[in-house]
Length: 431
Image (tube, rainbow, N blue to C red; front, top):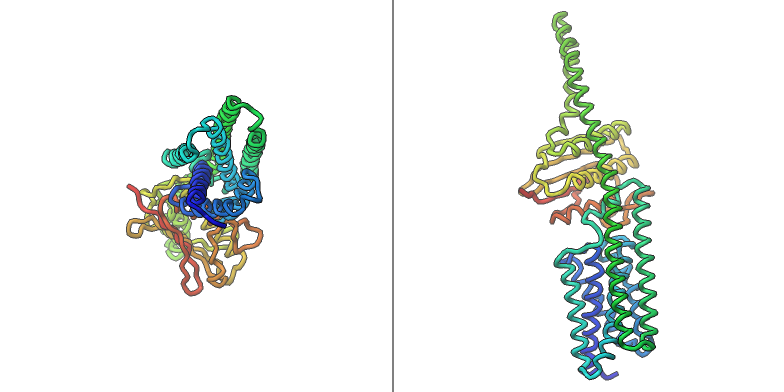
């Protein structure tokens, strides 16, 4: 097959159009440009080359629909997001791409005397500009904290996923409509073709707006429920503190009585027990956010109930961590829950977990440690979505932690020390 100059131009036309469409779709679900530019460019180039060599055997729009479907599992793995989000992004991209096909055909029919190269250049410029404007303005159909639904209660999580399925259904209807337009375009006069594509574009914009409103509403409901959960934990902590203050007078009277009776040994043991009980709560009080203290206190009670020794060491109060209190609790909560699950499966002689919060250089550091019960190689893919070293677990907790940490240019990594594994999250300090 001989490839001339215009064939090369044709390939690059499709590369730009497909790239702009994919950038449009994945930008609308909140993916950042620096993360998606290279993979989307490669995907666009491969699809365009495949189209060039297969164009004799396939109808244009059917070929591209199939290719967009095929790349879904690949892009899902590359971007480390769920299938539902990847499908929505790919469908948004495919809708824009098919609107481009219709628009190109209408322009070609309407401006028959104009060189097709200039018409293609107009379409490419419009679509690439649209994709970059969405990325620049950070326009997204999902809120920034959309991953919060992963830690919501099961019923709320299911409801949110039903909303995602509804979005996919609505986008499927639009795709079917555009496919009909492409197949029937030639039977309409040019003026009606313009009306059809204009109507479709307006409907598409309204649907995108509807999806955005729906997702923001769903996340607001989840936020309210999580906020209620944190308030309950906070009230629990405050109740413990009030109880300690209320009992303080009784303790003083008991100590005074033992001293008057010269029962010094009993008094010494009594004071030690009292100090130990008070220190359990005082350990978590230095933290800047009471809700974080409440969470750690709740985990201490859960661990004690399971017979696990949870040691909490606070060397920094996390005052200047850029995360929201929800995100801090998600990071700490997932790391501690992961350690509890690990220890429960392999209790050993002394079930033990250590939580350490400190400041290292210019970073907030959250370090959770427990005894190592598997070979280090078993943790190779621990931060991948859906991967878990434990049975009956979905493998989303640590992936959620990684997303939060990465959002603030932080890192999360593992350290192995003899028979202990450390999960260390570092987030830059922001004043």
